[in-house]
Figure 1 (cartoon, rainbow over the protein chains, first blue to last red):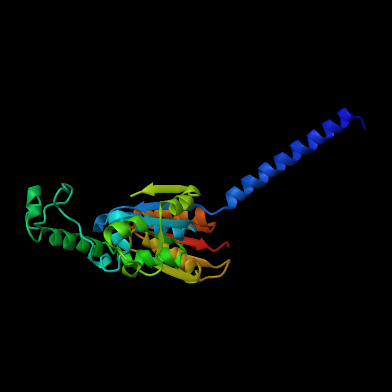
Figure 2 (figure 1 turned 90 degrees about the horizontal axis):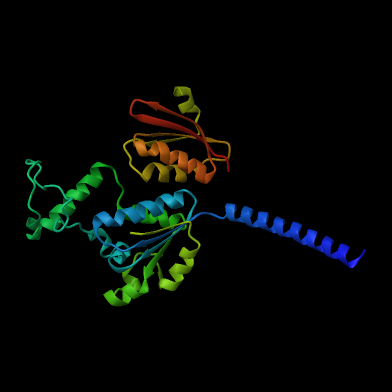
Length: 193
Length: 82
């Protein structure tokens, strides 16, 4: 075999092997489970649901899930605050009039500053959830945890807000931005809520 | 799908009057309770579940054998494939 023939043979074999490796990589990629990475940044009753509905659904689809609870979103996994999350009508023009007898009467938004309006709006929203058979937030957290989902508590928020690990619900992992980004880098879907 | 299919299914999940994500969570918990080759019959009323259950079957590799509508009730027969 001449040098030229040898080189041609080697090139052919290398090209063939490279094509095989490409196919193997594609197959591995296709078999890898999908991954959902969420940032939950809000601590109101209404905004606690979207990340937990998505997280519990994703584990039910067999996806890997990680939710990073940051700033007021940390309240969702704070065991003292979780049962007391509220929704405020002030500054929220989407909230309907709280007088059932007068459905067409649009209560001026500033009425929301009056004492008792936030608990009233919260009670109203909870009654909607009950009527629609929406499970409590704790149930969605349990489904996410049991499905192998990660609940990451933002350690910066813990420091800023003076929250200890003992204040958080069981199974929470305390992480910084770098650790979450490493997880999110492998995500199929990443959302900020 | 008639009543015999209901009785033939290995597991029945009633998700009527439940909204997203409950029909999917119940399916995902239910599928673990049956063996490969066995079936689940589930009934829902949330119009979103029509597409959600198809997506769940595709994502998890389970087989949606049959689906039908009976008034406001959607009925799905699912076979555990893996």
